[in-house]
Length: 299
Length: 76
Image (tube, rainbow over all chains, first blue to last red; front, top):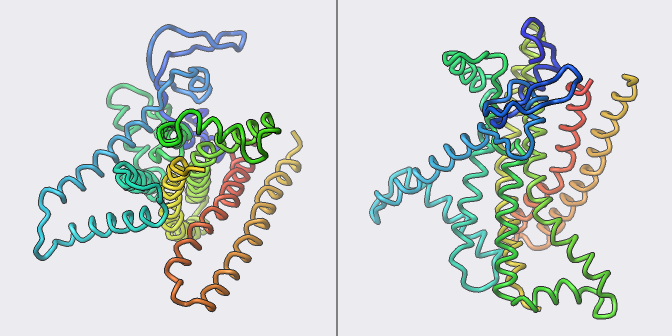
């Protein structure tokens, strides 16, 4: 928030779209430039966060994604430990449903022979991305307010504590996952096709030996576009969805009439959003499997 | 900056995104129904792929709407 006394729609939205950034503290000089102070700490304004540069860490993104990842692993582990061949418990049924769904999808789209990594990877990506997206359905002010009040106990100014609870609205998280997928694509391309095979595919397709530079440019762009679009699609969808939720939340401050409309809108958008978050998690998973499958194809 | 231009920019973003996606989803739904009528036994497989492609198409207007909202309410 720009100032404590007046909260405008614009400052409210910007406050909600700012990550909790940890890095080298910066201070604004009289000339309007930024100087590093040499101390580590949390950014108190979004300008300061922007000045922190490459090595700044978005603590909220990392914290939420680790919590959700641990919750996911704990759930599947607890089911695996108490699994029985008799009458399954409802929890076991639920876990089996997810695993069978992933299993069917991977069998349908992965044709590259035996690979023990793809199905567990697909399961991890699907459930983890789904849980990260699910944070979108929590009303936008609850957790940030709780965190700000908690930070106030430790002496921080609650108006300058940012907290974004949806990790997938941070491009660092989605592009990070897309980069891991890209790394796997390259690994399997080199492993299955061999260095010569993979480079040959980049150089000699689709126009043959005579148009080598054209092929190289085209194929490199195609290759790089895959992780780029994979990460940005998830980020864009979640960011837009979060944006609409924040806009609806601003309506609550505009009197009883608009507030009650906002209640209806929020429920409606949340129900529609259940479809989007599941679909985006599913698409991320299917595209991962398809990309790794393409890395397995001989020509 | 002239405020009017910002509104027009937001409207163009949201409108053109919705236009493209509407055409896309229309074609997609029509083909899905045709295929389902021709081979009803393939409907489960078709439905999965339908939702997959619908999600891919859906991403574009969603992102456009989000960005236009950002331009309209947060940038100004």
